[in-house]
Image 1 (spheres, helix red, strand yellow):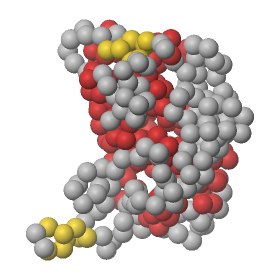
Image 2: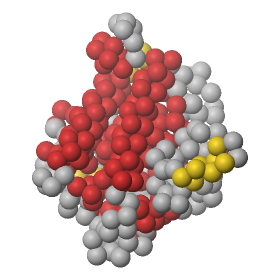
Image 3: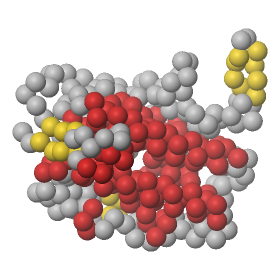
Length: 319
């Protein structure tokens, strides 16, 4: 067992106006049907490493610095791919990217502070092979998300919706109320990010995507379908729709967008940690994870690190 504290300004900024201390720990009284707080934070940190590396490299040309990637007993994995995006043709998208990059860096630093001695090092990340594989699964050719502003947003689309469903799915395992409040805050930020990305892509949905023969909207919807095929039989994913998207209000249909992917109750979807790993490993098969060679795939070629590292079988059953 180990204990990791969230102290001082980190919790102050994320949870409340007090100087209270939250503790993430693996306790003997943790129910058998779920992981402890520290395991959930480690799971989240893997995803934040991925997002931070993506946005930081797109904005600055560099990734996380040494102090933000080492683990208490691990060395960081390497990152393959990623470079600064030329946002000169779309300066507003560049400003969006910079804002999100700052948020994702803050998330990494916050979670690392919260884990204390239980902090995991950055796992190995491969953007080049993973984005190509994700594109091919969606029926596209090779794909470079760093080639320009729109490509960058399409790459971001792959991450952001998954992050929202991951935090919502993982929140139920948190025992500490301060940590739950902090997770809700991060979930809200990820929701803002996802909504921004989906809004801009929706505004460009009829534009052609290079020489793919597809519109941006068609490509996004294909990526959504491919992503949904990885996490089991349940329909937990939605694209951005098209010009014929409708919403029913008191029995009448109205043309609408699909900025927010929700169920029939207007609630965002949840994914279990295993289902999230199916997507980031880009496989419907079970993989053990754990940061060992060949234990993962996709964006995490050697798997994520921590306790919650496995993907589920293709049924999406997280038992």
